[in-house]
Amino acid sequence: MALVTLNQLFAADYAGAICGFDFVNLETAKAIIAGAEELGAPVILMVTEGGVKYAGLEYITAIGKIAAEKGRVPVALHLDHCTNFQLLIQAIKSGFTSVMIDASHLPFAENLKLTKEVVRVAHAAGVSVEAELGRIGGKEDNIQVNTAEAFMTDPDEAVEFVTATKVDCLAVAVGTSHGIYKGEPSLNLALLQKLQSVLDIPLVLHGGSGLPDAMVKKVVEIGVRKFNVWTELAVAHTATIRALLKEQPELYDPRHLLKPALEAMKEVVKSKILLTQAGH
Image 1 (cartoon, rainbow, N blue to C red):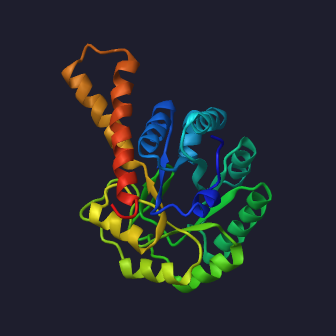
Image 2 (cartoon, rainbow, N blue to C red):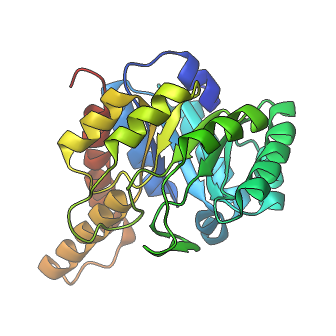
C-alpha cells in the first residue's frame, strides 16, 4: 500500500486511537508494521530529529516507504517533535506524509506564527501537520523539559491557536511525560475532557509509554485519536538483547540478537494497539 496522511487515517473513522510508534532502523520499522498487520490496524511510523540524525533522512525515508508499500495496513510516515523548519521542508520533499512542528518552547504568539507557516507550506504539498501547545515533560531525544518548565494546555489558548493555524491535530499537555515515568503517572482527565469539547480536531497524547492500561483506555474513551509510544519499544529491544547475551555470551551475529528483539517489540506494538482500540 502507498503511504497515507494523518488526515486520511483520521477520516477513515477508525474506532479508537491510532498508535504512532517511533522507529530508528529496519528492525523497529519491521516490528511496528508486523504488529499492526497481525491486528489489521492502521499505524503511524514516526521518526524524531534524533532518529533522522542517527539514520540519515534518505535511509529512514526509504525504510518508511518500503514498509508502507509492502505492508497490508494503512501507514503514515510522520516526522515527530521537529523544531527545525528546514528539516521539516526536507522531510516533506523526501516523502513524509505528516510532520509535527514542536514550537512549544516558544512564547504562544511565536508558536502560533511558526506553526501557521508550517501549515501553509505542508498543506500546499498535501502533508498533514501536528503541533503542540503546552509543554510535555521528560526527554525526547534532543528535547528535554524538566518539571518546572512543563505546563498544561490552556483551553482558551488552544481554541485561538487551532483557529488561527488551521493545524490538523494537536498534541496537548495534560500530565504525561516522555521517557520512563518516575512514580505513578497522574493525568488531568478533566482538562483533557475540556479540550476535547472545545476543539474540533483530533487530539494527540505524547508520553504513552508506561501509562497504566486503565488510564490508556480512559484517554481513548475521552477522545484521544493519536497515541504515541517509543520508550516501551526501546526498553523491550534492549532488555531482550541483554538477556540473550547473559544467557549466551558467545553470540556475536547481530541477526541472532536483533530478531528476538524485533519479536519483543512487535508484542509491545500489539499490546498498545489493542489497548487503544475502542471496545477493548
